[in-house]
Length: 625
Image 1 (spheres, rainbow, N blue to C red):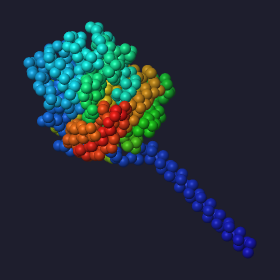
Image 2 (spheres, helix red, strand yellow; image 1 turned 60 degrees about the horizontal axis):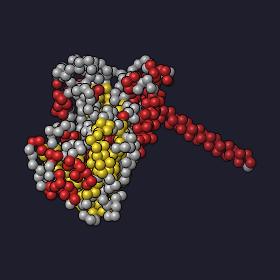
Image 3 (cartoon, one colour; image 1 turned 90 degrees about the vertical axis):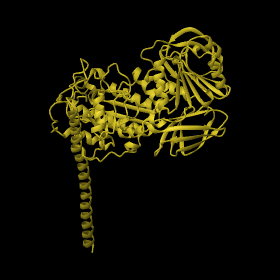
Image 4 (cartoon, rainbow, N blue to C red; image 1 turned 30 degrees about the vertical axis):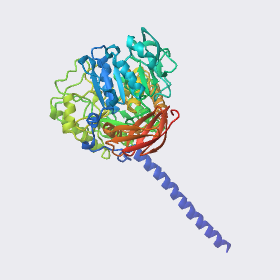
């Protein structure tokens, strides 16, 4: 009996041990399989997009969207005065993108100022107010009855300025102009407020003024001595003064924010997107060593990319919610005349492309090779050592080869965005893309002007051919740089957008941060991401396609608003599935919302998500938010 019992126990123990070994073996096999799949870089699927393109015929250019709408704003200029043409050009785009239907009158052309009662707001863009004559007094009477006027240019001290000075917040002024080296918006006025943003080329652009107690200052110079943006209640209306005196593209967000102060509330469409591009990725990895990579890591370039650079980017992506968009280069040759030749070494493309897609990132197009798409009539001179393409056929063939190669090595990739090498794209080649390469739905070149005439400078919007223009604003790891950080804060407030790009080979080029090293570069990038997260915590982290799809919706969206003592009622034109708007409540506090939802950003500034063509916002009186 005892012997039988022992035999039974022994048999059960053997079965248990065998089952345990099988389980352990299964675990090891699973781990090995995961590691094998990871090493091969093939465990990925198609990018899961949270927002996709509208049909081309449903994507509307901004100018078309507001064409025919009744003007609610009057822009008064005097083109004979110095600087007015620059200011007018900037303001035209600001008002277009804010979807403010505007009529412009030019005093230098003999235009008459129309009856003001038909307008809600007015922008005056001329430093010397004297040519307005008695209209200055009529304008201020209109403001007292509820109108909103913005003086967009640094004023000159003249008789008429002295007459209306107390009404627009000026206690006293001099004939002296002071250099403005930077701007510090108040924390409650703008996204990114409470910090100083330095100007690249400061000059004496601001009038020396002292304000009265009724003026509400929204931004001051970096030294705190000169008011740059302020507003003043004028009975039932509002006057806003801009004393910045610089009118470049990089300042648009400051003027848009100033304009939004007019009226009890204002809403304007925005994009709501942050996209991050990796140029030349995936691409053939350079062989050998990089001087500074070898210095800091004692690794080859290939080892650095796989063991340091990419793992660091993955950690940043996980920490900040980034979804990178890599844009592919098939080879780095300079042959533009012969038929394209297929790349035979797919290893790096499959490996890095697979890693990117497994992060739910996106693959876009950069080029068959790294030669920008230009024809022989484009001259590089000594600026670049690039080669032109001989004709239209060669350009189309190069793009078709890149598209076919990408589909071959990364069949799950869904691509739509083209990034021009070195941001260079001729007007002829741009036209070719729209006509002959339907796979390209969006172009992401560069937003800010350049000293060179070669880069393709873009606006955010939809072009006449249906291609989406979705430019990049800042780049690299040195985004604390004066000009780039100024551009970044401006565009957060203009379009609620942040687009950034970097290259794997930045660490091979001293001009792009190689000498400082990857640690410094990465920390600079982290500093920008920290700033972005703090300034715009609700911004959507998107891929290039999603950003372009958001631009489509922004481009066509229009807004009009009716105000009562108890509500703000918005009517949205060309709303598709959802729209995003900045909403500033200057007089009153938002309450319940129908047809959308509000997220407080800072001060009395909110992000409005609209899900209906009519949005009702309860207005609680008794002070701003």
